[in-house]
Length: 277
Image (cartoon, rainbow, N blue to C red; front, top):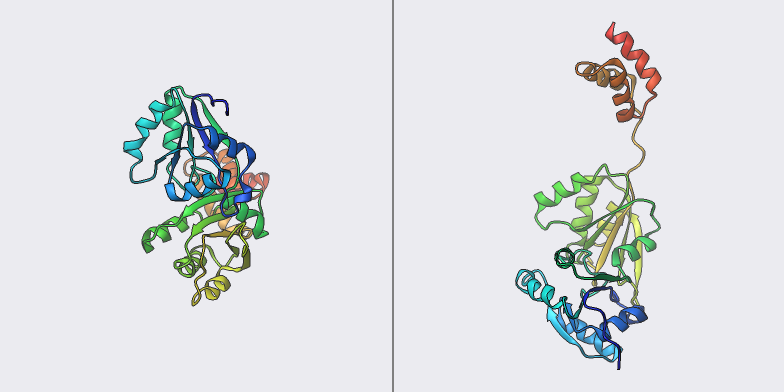
């Protein structure tokens, strides 16, 4: 007989494809929780069958979260409630953060059991810089909103990570190339499964590759950061200084423009003094 878990919320990461990736700790928590909040009971039932355990499951997803959440929060006062997604780490590209927020507000114990995450796994496969990255989830389906979202991150100096589906892949890659430039990228799919692959190339090349043959499976797009910007010219510096001097002191203007354009502050200070005179 397993000992009871302390009451509270247990955030449990589950496999993204290969059931062998379920950690012993995750299996233990799922086997002992009083109830498991799940996206799809059919998906989690297969996982529970794999570990040889049966527990009560409560559907918790976008469409019923507002109604179900209060009951789960109440149960956390006396029972262990586990939260899982269909695959990977809960709260990554799903609404689970509200459950965590409300559990903390109610004073309940909140524990995380880390494990697989498709975004991080794809980043390790892509062969692109990993020192700074930004996870963007799924892009909007409508063209205008999608273009606006891409424009928001065009100048971010970090590797970008997006989730996508097969039918939308080529169009999304084309939109990304239009908005970001033809950067190095990788399309990863079937991560941890038998046919795992990471196809690399530029965004334009990848869009062409998948134009007529959309792949199956869950897909992660990883895009390298933008190249180094062109150095500012003397005219650029003078224009920026002239504008800054209309509202700042010479020293402040030189400092602002130096930071903005990546130029030498002392040189800019001397130039600003000359312009001021």
